[in-house]
View (spheres, rainbow, N blue to C red):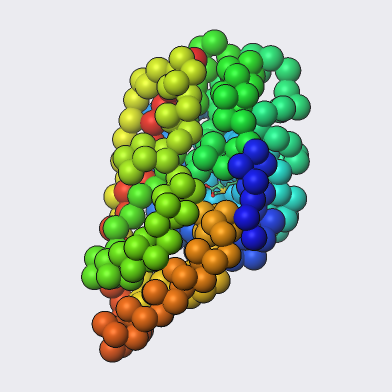
Length: 266
Ligand SMILES: C[S@@+](CC[C@H](N)C(=O)[O-])C[C@H]1O[C@@H](n2cnc3c(N)ncnc32)[C@H](O)[C@@H]1O
C-alpha cells in the first residue's frame, strides 16, 4: 500500500500492535511524561491538547500533571485502545475526539499547551497544522514536542541491509532529520521559538527475530508509505542477512533510547 503525499497517515492498521512495538518500558512512560510536564510548566489547571493522541502512550501518564486533557486523532481505532486502557487504569479527565490537526474543534486561544509526539511528519499539510496550533494555543502557552531516537547495538547489519535495499523509498518517509523531529522543525519554520529542552535515556533489548518480524509485519508507518516492491526487496535483504549472520535468533541485543523533549513558544 502507498499513501498519497497529500493525505495524512491514519493509524487504524497499527491499533492492535502499536503498544507492543512503540510502548515505553514500565515506569519509563511516567518519567517521559514527568519530563514533558516539568519542561512545559504544566499545572493542574493547565488546559492541554495532544494532537495525534493515539493509544495514550503519553496521554495517560501526562494527564496526571494537567487540568483537562483533550486528545485528538484521525484514528478511531487508536483512541479505542486508549479508552480501554483508561477504563482499566483510570486517569484524570481525558476527553477524546476524532479530529484533524489542520482543523481542530476548538475556539481560539484556549490551550495552555499543545503536545505533539511523532505527528507532523504524518500530516497532509504541516503548515496548516502549525497555523491551527498558533490559533488555538494562548499567546503565553507552549507546544511540548517529544520524539524518540534509538540505536540497536549489534543489529546494525540488519538495518544496513534494509536501508541499502529500500534506498530513497525509506529515506523519504522517515520521521525528520536524525537529530530533530519534523514537528519541532515545522513549528520553528513557522515562528515558534525553543525555550527549553531535555532528554530521557533508557535501554531495552531486541532480538534478531523480533527485528525481522517488524519488517515482515510492516509495523512502522514509513513501511506502509513505501511501494510494495521496495518493502518486499527490503524484507528479502533482511532475511538474507539474518540467515547469514545471526545463529541465535533469540539472543537479546541492547537498544539505547533517547526520548527528546523540546518546548516552544508561539
Ligand atoms: C505515530 S502515532 C503517535 C501517537 C502518540 N502521539 C504516541 O506518541 O504514542 C501518530 C498518530 O497521529 C495520528 N494522525 C495522523 N495524522 C493526523 C492528523 N492530520 N490529525 C490528527 N491525528 C493524526 C495517527 O492516526 C496516529 O494515531
